[in-house]
Length: 580
Image (cartoon, rainbow, N blue to C red):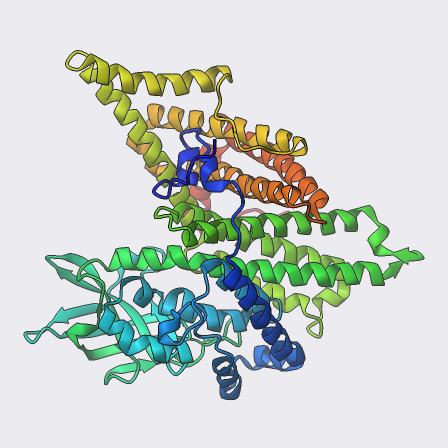
């Protein structure tokens, strides 16, 4: 009998306990019918509009700016109102449908996706999540029409991933208004936005950081010139400065002092847009690469017949399917009302952002010399995709977040064990109950008998990859348990080990998403189900090798030598060797 989804539980965090929440993963989520119908029309319009603008889009990249008439065309297509409720003039797309639209725009140009995505995913997302009814009535209709374009102002020169270190300040005045001073950097849409979500230090009794809605036309708001970037050059990126800006009290976004929670909620819920864009870019790269491989001849035959080229094409398909499966699974969790999805969102961002960079690298390689030339699209995609592992949380920071979030859950389990031991003499039934549950899990993991199995009915062709994921969920739990017992709180400073645990968790969650989607395609007799099964089986084998390597490295590694080498290189400030 199928169990209802546990909307209050995180699939990824439970993996650190060796548990697979199959009720949250199977069957694979579907986009609601209303969105499916709208997507066809929206994506056709996107293709019709951007498909004829390839030369223009390349020129915008060279010039480093999208012209005003192009931005106006995006407004007229309704692309700034994708996720805004219908009552305010938007389309009210689900997270899954929204990610699919950004995938379509990204198949043409990443800067277009960034202009739209920075507006919806983060720029005005805080208003949707935390805004008062009055704030929504005041701003959402103009944000839906694109009259106002939104930007997210968090990063500062001394506060990138460390958002707690922000120096922009807001001081509360006697009349309840706030005076805002400071500067934000690398603000996407900074030069074209009329609506800023700004985070400032307030150091009030309620908390240290507060979020504000700041209108661009307020006195004291200014923005710098367009930044000259490596990639996504056509999108607007500027500094935004605030000098004595008077912000009315009704423009506080969310509770005073709770800005950190607001910022993290925005970033977590916005990562499906970034992942959707990455998937769209990969789809386009696969299309380009297959055409190149089939059309280019060497030694009297198409290069598509050479094994090493075929291996690249196959791996690109695996990475794209895996990233797509994960992004849409996370979107399905959000749309399904799940409350704890931050680790899953982080995993989807890390995996998708790195997958497209691998894909871009291989596509350029398949194109050979043409790939290095600016007249072909490969070099721009390579430049554009590089930012994805940096913004909305660097992948290094997100790996630490994934690992520490999982270890926190595992640590709580250990804490329950310790408490149970102390309670045995006072309350034997309750004490032995907790102890018994913990001990049972340890015995299952030690013997392999009773490991958490996926009970969802899978086709026989998918049982082997399922068994791999079941086994390594147990291995992850054991590894986390050993680290916590051995190092205690010191594990929070062991970043090498945190990365290894995070990479195991990433492979497990992505693998489960691939498995669920492949099972759904088989059940639906999809014409490509056979290839989906192949992908699931190959991904599981590749993941097994990576996971085994990462878990072995928790015991046998070169961490100490790496630390010593880093210390000497940093102290020296240069490379000391020469053949002379």
